[in-house]
Amino acid sequence: MSARIGPSTLLAGRYQLERVLGSGGMGVVYRARDLLHEAFGEPDARVALKLLGETLTESCDGHVLLYSEFALTRSLRHEHVVRLFTFEVDTACQAAFFTMELLQGLTLDRLLLECPDGLPWHELQPLALQLLDALASVHQQGVVHGDVKPTNIMVGEQGVRLFDFGLGHAQAQQAAGLPGLNRSRLNAWTPAYAAPELIAGAYPCASTDLYGAACVLFALARGRVRQLNEPLHRPRQLPRHCWPALRSALATDPAYRTLSAAELREALGGQRHRGWLWFER
Image 1 (tube, rainbow, N blue to C red):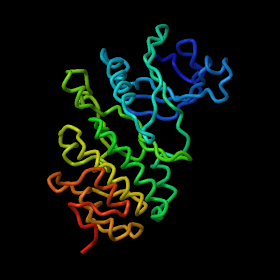
Image 2 (image 1 turned 120 degrees about the vertical axis):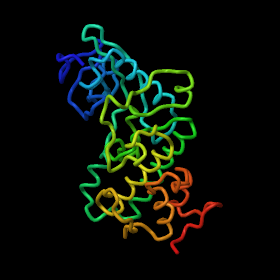
Image 3 (image 1 turned 90 degrees about the vertical axis):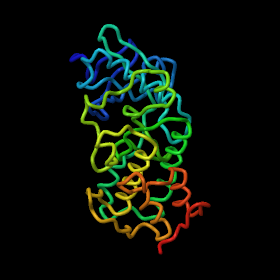
Image 4 (image 1 turned 180 degrees about the horizontal axis):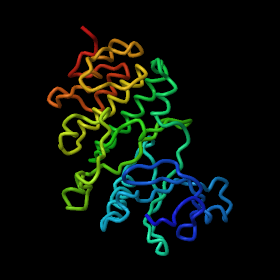
């Protein structure tokens, strides 16, 4: 990313950058005003705009990877997955970027800080069901998120939004031989939410997504993250009948992580799945 880009920069003659919303190894997200929509009377013409981060800006294939993330996310259709708008290139700044809906609310890492005693079940359950609905839909559409963690999930007045598919991939993308992320270039995983096999070098899959989601919900239920090799005990905010399913999703050995996001959603929703008995013995 060019050093000239920052707050007040105008990209593609249309997007006025305002402030940084978040940053990581792969990208930087700004709040921006869409001056074209504003000129036509749009009452709220702000968008979120993602550019490459410093790690990838000098890479010859960085812009291709950014487009890959855009195309992957844009293909998804679910009310709890972030909506993407356009992919563009500012030739003067030599910067590729894409725009998306500007999310309003708290990321779950901030919510976690505000709830040191854990989130009450009547508040946690709808959040959990929406997140697992989104994840189940993403998996059904042949996509793996790759990095499910609190900083990539937001909750606001319109409910949960799952975003940042920068480490994701699609089965069709792999089959077509399209570019994907070379994970050796980034120390990408957050240990508290990454499945052990992912850290060991395995490719992201639906099971690793499930593990990340389960770690998020476990942390919210007790008010702090799970430490590696820490004994598992049911958080007091979690109903007893939900614990066996969540405990299975938290298994460090993927051979014991035998349920899907949809099945975990069923369990936490108070329903009974044909292949499971949702009660604690």
